[in-house]
Image (tube, rainbow, N blue to C red; front, side):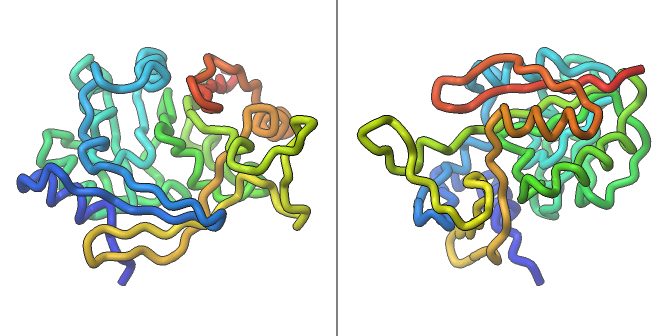
Length: 237
């Protein structure tokens, strides 16, 4: 049985444990923690990048990797038809208890829930792709789920800053044949630990090139404050 780290943390928060933290360690050796409260933010405390992304949503929306459902709740409150999906059963249980009636435990890659006008992947939701070479598969699945004229809205980060710099300003990136944003993560919450999983951080230029190969026109919407960015793809009608 796969450990549901996010689900346990989210459900504990709903039961009153407001100071919980999810700990992560990446294949770069970087250790970090995420306050569980971060998954329950109100619109007013979301970063500008996320607020902008939500303002661009329209029509029927598929919130991919919805977590605790905070983005879905905001969009639903504005009258949009939102379907929220996550692989975490605990997260979906929490979403439903928070009032999201169309919250579904599902894997994006296998999901078949009709057609949508917006695919939303926030908090680096594009990370589910895992590897740059799998972006082709992502675009193919996205086309299956989008109506003509539909859009993909996502954010990601260029993690080049995590590598050492030389005196000329260049970065020391391992020459092992893989893209530097292809990481492996493990997560832990209390006594629950995840299996290692692949996660992709992709710089905008690399993503744009892959999108063009797949016949998509990708536009940079805005840059964040630390190597992060928001982008939008519109599928021709």
